[in-house]
Amino acid sequence: MKRSVLYTHEQIIKAIEGLAKEISADYGDGLLCVCVLKGAFMFFSELVKRMDGDVRVDFVRVSSYNGNKAGTLKLLLDLNEDVAGKDILLVEDIIDSGATVSYLTKLLSGRGARSVKVACLFNKPLSQKTKVTPDYCAFSLKNDNFIVGFGLDYDEQFRCLDHVEEVRFD
Ligand code: 5GP
Ligand code: MG
Image 1 (cartoon, rainbow, N blue to C red):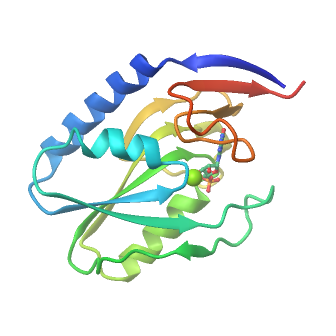
Image 2 (cartoon, rainbow, N blue to C red; image 1 turned 180 degrees about the vertical axis):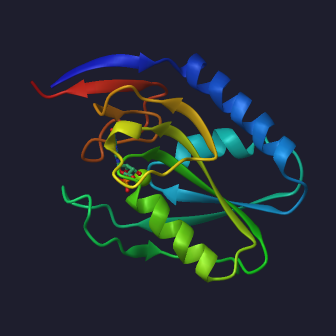
């Protein structure tokens, strides 16, 4: 396996600062930020601490597909909060096929959320069959190479790196 640095800690934090400003400008008080575990945990904490106003947090976990991106997703950990009538910001590490974000958006809309928007650290537009456009995105990737670090893992390794690396298996 070959690993090379794609984004430094400084680049990532700068991008997150920009996103936090953008999001804070769009919302008044009462936003519920939902962290999609596990991958988004580091992005989530760096984002919410930079946001203004009365920001609340909650957590969900969705089963990851095993190689089959079209596979059915399951909710492994549900929110504690009632989302009815609330503005929700789903915070994802990376949008690949778009299946996770589509699933969660439908779920929370179906529970009566007033609005559901999506913030991601990374987007892989080339991987998406059904186009998912994140409302807030730090980095749009030019290829669909696998990345690790800053919360993202390879078989549970590399999540705690403070930067992001591209992994190559050739
Ligand atoms: P989607 O449902 O959009 O296909 O997949 C989203 C999930 O797939 C992400 O939350 C992440 O867990 C995983 N994933 C997709 N691409 C990558 C990648 O390049 N690196 C890592 N570590 N995980 C990825
Ligand atoms: Mg994830």
